[in-house]
Length: 551
Image 1: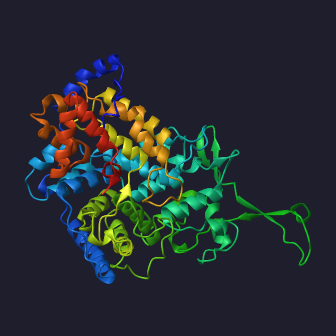
Image 2 (image 1 turned 120 degrees about the vertical axis):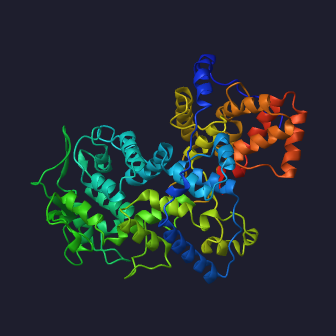
Image 3 (image 1 turned 90 degrees about the horizontal axis):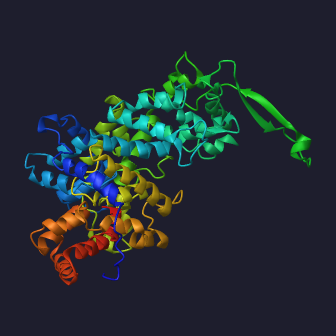
């Protein structure tokens, strides 16, 4: 390990000195606060039990026994990654282990869901779904404003149907009324791309891939081309002006198409010509749910969130399942099967959808229930996973918690958290948060995102692995100085054995097994200083598969 000797000397001295007082002041501040036992929703237990029954039945159908329960610290780590995009700090781990009241996992997860950092993370994940990954039209699209608005809405636990209604039907400037960025993101060549918006609505809010109906009747669905055109026509009144996004009732949605050629004739587009026709708004199903009054977009929003539109609630439920477990129950996430004629208790997505509708479209309730299931608290190891022939059966049966690699933002956020023994959140010193912000930008730019359509368990590329191994940022993060976790552990640990344990808790939220403890004690003993040895241990754990995956 000593070949890795080019440990960077950190941030600028002035920046370090400026943040010192703020960092020390933050030490005494508590962060995640668990809910009191009485505040854990009792009626949620019925939902969790129904979900558990559905998954248990799936284990039986596949003839697979479930994995053993995970440790509480493993569940704490996966909950923080799933719901806040980071790992628990040593401060939080110590307070969690000191909590001996009943249902501590449920209470701590409930407390995390009420924190702003959880809302920020969930908003970032959902903003990518609702507004795409690209930058969008610069003049009329503000991703940061849209994400901040989503953060506020999630933090306030605003019902998801209200959030969606504002996104689909809102009017105003993309800066003052951030919800409209859902629509303005589709601006292209001075026109709103109504077909793009229709495709996004169907994929994100209905869980249906009907984009191909833009050109022809859908081959595997009863959705016709005319119905897709009618869905797009709901955006036909929308226009962008100096005052922002508005609806002009005089506007109509027009569709251009190539005129039909004579049978057997050889024609070109120029020879056959183009025809144009007006298309009125229509929906592919549930016409009775469309409100009688309002703009086209308001009526579309009312139809989408109507209590009888089970596709909407199922789409939201499947998305949240993917966020919590790393992969959706129904895959692909945007191509759900049609809802059964009546709710199906054997389908967790249907169970969640019914509960979402019946409990005020409460996202926080659903996330807490998912994190309270038996599946969420299973170990990620299983005897059958060691055999290539049986491993797929374990995955299909959901008999173990599914492994998934961390998103680049989550990876760098977790790496940044390990530089402090205390929680880095909205209450952390301004300097700490600013440094993390710019580190995240740099790391994501250099690391890159997974390719669109890449499998959920795709591994890092060689350049990405080398970035973590040899990048300047990694050197800065593991440096042992007065402000970093590595430096404080080196200075305060009673002995090498205690230092190794604290490093493992800080990096991996667990204690080392005896073999790891012995190896890492040897690393510390052979280093010229304890600080250098701890840098080597941190570097090794940074580059382990365990650190980079949710498990």
